[in-house]
Length: 165
Image 1 (cartoon, rainbow, N blue to C red):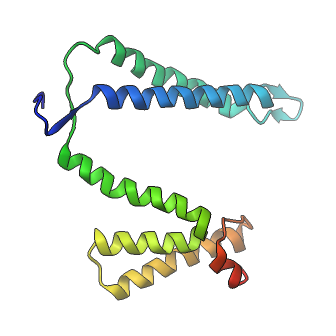
Image 2: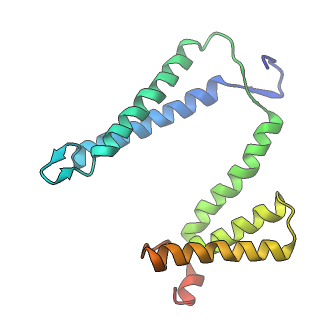
């Protein structure tokens, strides 16, 4: 789709922005790995050993994409997505962004209940009983597996605190 109409978005800017952000993230990972130690100690790898090499791989791959994007900037600008495709992405991205913020305010269990329920009703068109059952069961299973079995504490909100969780 090489159509330059207003109904499509070119691929230059999305590729440049995402690859530049990943270059920045890779630089942070590498810098922090160097700070905490990325070598091999007497008792095995230091805590920054594996993140350092993952950061290097991320830097090389995203840096390559960024350089290639910048080198062909004046050339052809193939379509990245049309407006309908972007709307579909935003239909998922926006609730997920709200979910991440809601975890901080409401805790992971209540936020997950609401998110699962929203997606099941809005996009899956499931009946209320199925939606409520799955929306309650998934956070319950996550609670049992992580907090009771593996003893990993997950973010709690005011409702969980009231329930003594």
